[in-house]
Length: 397
Image (cartoon, rainbow, N blue to C red; front, top):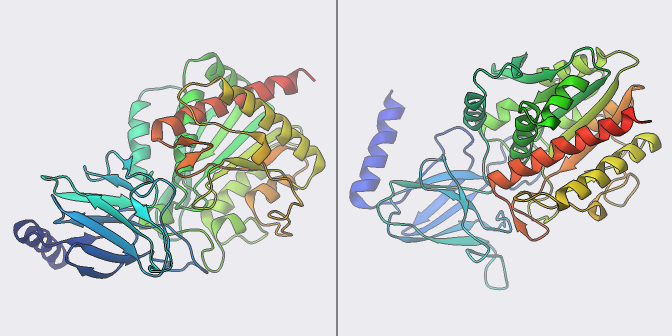
C-alpha cells in the first residue's frame, strides 16, 4: 500500500508541475531508466536474465502532454523500422510513431532516439518496441467467443512463477490430423499473437474453412508458451539457463513445455501431426518466412504449405504479404545449427510428423506493408485457410 501511495503521489506531482516521469508498473512493461533531462529521456532495455543483448522495451511516460520529447537508448539502437508503437489510452489501442520519428546512431551520436510531440490533454503515453499483445488482449478475444460451442479452454500447466497457463482446443478428437500451433515461446514476440488470434478466429467461425478444420482435425493451440515472461515483460529470447524453445529435451525445466511434449506424445502412431511454431524475426527484418526442417520429407511438406500460403496471400485483401523466396532451408548459412531441443526439431523427430516448422512473422512491416493488429489477424485467417487446403491435399493422395 505504501508503494502504491508513493506511485500515485508521483503521478499527481507530474500532472500538477509538468514533470516528466517514467513508469514500468504494469504487465508487460520493460525499461531501465537512466536519466531524465527536462524533455530528454534516457532508457535501455531491461535484459534481466537474458544471455546477451535483445531489444524489447515497453514503458509509460507521464507529464509530457503538449511537449516535444526525445527518448534516447543509451549507446544502443532498439528502435524498429516504423519507430516505436505508442498508445494514448493506457494500452487499449496502438499506432506506430512512424519511420520519420527516429534517428539511428551516427558519427556524432552513439545512441538511437525517437522524437514525439505529445498531444495536449493526455495523462500519459505508452511506448513500446512493437505493438504489444498481452493476456488482457487474449481475454478480449475470448470474450467475443463467449457462448461459442466450438471454443474450449483447459489448464496446460502451472508455470514456474505460479501462473496457470492454458491451452485452446477444438475439432474432432477422432480425426487423424492433429494441428499443434504455438506462440510466444519467446515472450517478447507479440506480433505473432495477432496471427495466432486470426487462425483461431477462423477455426471457431462458421465459415467453410472453420467447419472443415473442426471436422477433419483436432486442434491444440497454446497462445502464451512463456506466460510468465509475457506478464513480466521479459525478453524471453536467450533466457538463462535456456529459453522455452531450447527446452524440448528429455528433461524440460518449464512445465508448459513438458505439458506440450506430453500432449504430442499422446497422439497415435497413425495420426499426422501438423506443428507450427509462430515467432518474430530480428528487430529490423522486413519479411516473414518459414524455417524448413532437416528431414527431407517434412521439408517437402513445408514447401507445399508455403507455396499454398503464398498463393492465398496474393488474393487476400487487408492482410500482410508473404513470399516463399524468403524462406530458409536447413543447411543454409543462417540455419545450420545442430541444436535438437527446439519445438520444431522435437516434432521433426517423431515418426507421425507431417509438418514441423517455425514461421517468423515480421514485427512492424512486411515487404512494404506496415503491420497493424487487424492485418495480422487477417493474415492469420489466410494461414488457417491454407492449412485447410493442405489437409485437403493430404486426403487426395
